[in-house]
Amino acid sequence: MTSLPPLSLTRLTLTRFRSYPALDLDTAAPILVLAGENGAGKTNLLEAISLLVPGRGLRGARMAELGHRGSGDAAGGPWAVAGRFATPLGPLSLGTGVEDPSATRRSFRLDGAAPRSQAEIASRVAAVWLTPQMDRLFLDGASARRRFLDRLVWALEPGHAREVAAYDTAMAERNRLLAEARDGGRIDPLWLASLEDAMARHGVAVAAARRVLVARLNAAVAGGVAGAFPAAEASIACTLDSALAEGPALDAEERFRAALAEGRAGDAASGGARQGPHRADLVLTHVAKRLPAPLCSTGEQKALLVGLVLAHAALIGAQRGAAPILLLDEVAAHLDRPRREALFDVLPRLGAQVFLTGTDAGVFAPLGTEARLLRVRPGEVRPEAGWPGFAAAQDGLRGV
Ligand SMILES: Nc1ncnc2c1ncn2[C@@H]1O[C@H](COP(=O)(O)OP(=O)(O)OP(=O)(O)O)[C@@H](O)[C@H]1O
Image 1 (tube, rainbow, N blue to C red):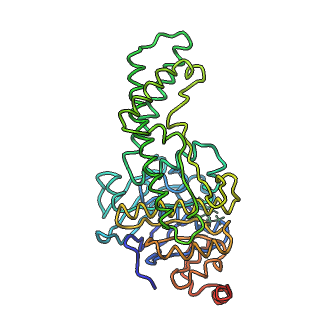
Image 2: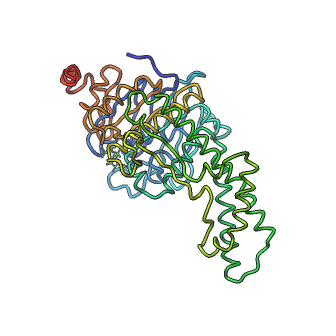
């Protein structure tokens, strides 16, 4: 068995979390496959792990949804998730949860004490996930893709979230002022200019950070970070941001500020700023096919997304010195056999601890002894010795 990756979850303990009244699970393995029927509680486990890092977790759920509801319980109560980790700086214990189910925020414990900040937690533990909900990324509107891209940047540049928020705030206030002026109200021109100044400063910072990330992702993909995985064929771009963040930052800010000042009347008529990083879009292209992602098949889109997430995980790993924990929910669902096998070939070589879910354990048999199989049934998880269909899968591989 391969040794444990530098950052690994070694034990997961749930108390009244989702479908689990209580669970204590040994997770000290490089790759864990959580197999079980629909509704067994596989995604709930990934979600619990995702909540051990700051953020809203992989479902973006509200706190009140997370407490275990027994039959007849109209509302969930308090809940807790605790994890023990092996990290490059030594063992670490992390806990999160709410005591009051009406709370909107959860609290954290780091080695038994309240952490100084969420950044302190993020500096010790990182996780990256891919869920079936993200399959729609290329079919939905651009705003979902911008949020996705910004989350990718944020994982590497924690200050990015502040820049995005500052830009959005300034833009919303400028939109309000322009609407007021359009409706005959009197507005303060100095206030308007200062808002455009803020939009230019934060907007160029947002665009520049996205541009840097996109370049690094492309380099990671081209450098074969995703191994032989077909998604290494992706090219990644973000529209608008190149032009917006071109040249020295001060020049770019000046251009954007001037464009905003010139565009006031048109922006007022159309109900908001018509240009800026809030209009950018993330574009993935299948290089071999020369097709943008929305024109690719479901499985091809999934492969592009997997490649993007693996490249992102590799960048985080290079920056932190330890790869983030990978949570891949139903990742094999739309992938054909060659793509699955290419993925299973890459996963053990990423230096990351990987959690995979699926309804059919046999699909994961090619991972062989690299992976530990856990059988998930409502409210319980048990290790299972051996893979169903393992011998057949091996025969199949030999036959290729
Ligand atoms: N707060 C809660 N209390 C109790 N049960 C819950 C709560 N929230 C969700 N559940 C239940 O948890 C079960 C497992 O959900 P989960 O999404 O983990 O399933 P899964 O194994 O990933 O299934 P699938 O293969 O269908 O994706 C569902 O039946 C759901 O109704």
